[in-house]
Amino acid sequence: MRLVDSHCHLQAGRFDDDADAVIAAARRAGVERLLVPGWNIASSEQARELVERHAWIDAAAGIHPHDAEKVGEGAYARLEELAADPRIVAIGETGLDYDRLFSPAEAQLANLRRHLQLSLSTGKPLILHCRSAAGRRDAQDALLDELRRGGFGGPGLPAVFGSRPPGVLHSFSGPADYAGAALDLGFAISISGLAFRRGEAATAEVVPLVPADRLLVETDAPFLAPPGAPRRRNEPEWVRITAEWVADRRGDDSTVFGRRLIAAYDHLFAHGR
Image (cartoon, rainbow, N blue to C red):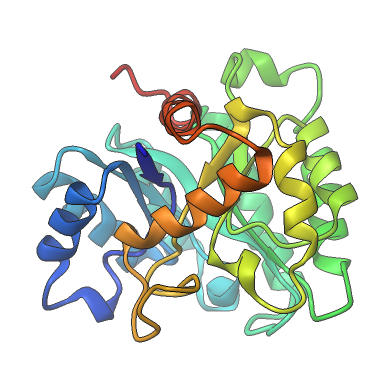
């Protein structure tokens, strides 16, 4: 099966000693597209450096909700500089995390709004993280509200993004109606190893609902290893496990599914490959 890993933190410390070997293993496993998002300014710059060493990899720049309280105007000015770089293909990872609340909700919302504005001004899609505490959906509802208020899903969006999705809900988590609302706003959805965890059963319901041209898979490495992958550290090559699970839930032929994955990735991130 042809594969993409649409979200992988190869610049994380757990890859310091062997990132190039991990990338080579991903290629041998069939991964043809790989995106490395930042979670703060330093990691966004490191993602761009990876692209300079490996031309087939893509990078994104953003500030994670966990870091929202830690950044000031200087960081946002630098983020705008990074976003203008053609090697940066997306804005994020950003979003809302009301599960762990490493930053207060208001700081997360303010951070998210800066990213929404940056996405609209650059025409580069968002990479959105969204988690609520177990049994809740407050982060998902707040994210949808902010997207609508920011103009996403509105009539002016095609002038910015054309026919492309304005972003992707990465490592999807939430109920089926949340997925439906995000799809109505034009967003893509990416499935990770989180789908196999307790409390995430709704993802199996969501997978068949997503249009093929807006469906991606990812590892979120080094986190969220799927069943059958080494627990010590997730790696891009193990995206195969999640991709096979998604294809099976959709009843898709693996060859067709892999071809559609490549096409969906290239369309979202505006590749002319």
